[in-house]
Image 1 (cartoon, rainbow, N blue to C red):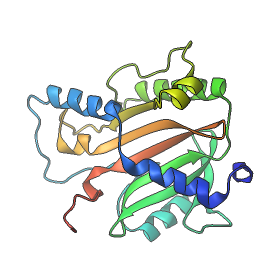
Image 2: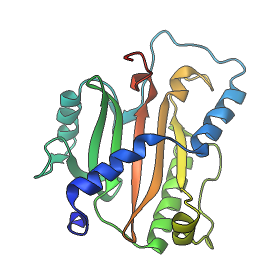
Image 3: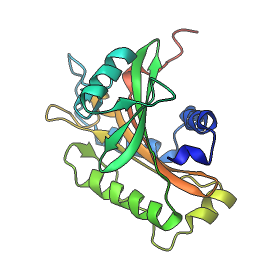
Length: 212
């Protein structure tokens, strides 16, 4: 397991810190959708992001139960951190909540890889999402083959992210439902090891400052 090189609590907390903000990729995606929303209509009943067919909603305990029904199991060191297989990869799964209501499913690779392999994995994921009719894509988000991602990340603090919106047959392009069903992923690096972190976000449930 990859936790040998970095203390588990440090690595896990570093992932949680990625919550801070989203990059221009997501802003660009939402801007494109908004421009297309000429006749967008509001829906009487909102539709939320789904992960493996499970709505990203409800309580944390409910979500853990549903994910375990899909084959995930609690890790030996943290009961609400799950492990299992997703899209052909061994992953860990964390659940983000706001007032105990789920707003995010956070998936990250259990095993690290090198720079060349992570670039291939990132680009393959981009193409999988682009070719999946359940997602809206702003266009090509792949990394150029000659890109030195190690240099760009360490020297220029560049981030590599790709963002998509989940769709359904009832969507009007640019509707609130569509914009609030965000799925995005990024490359993360720690001590020269690379992983993919993926986020299934239900923006309806995200903290909006109303508790302040």
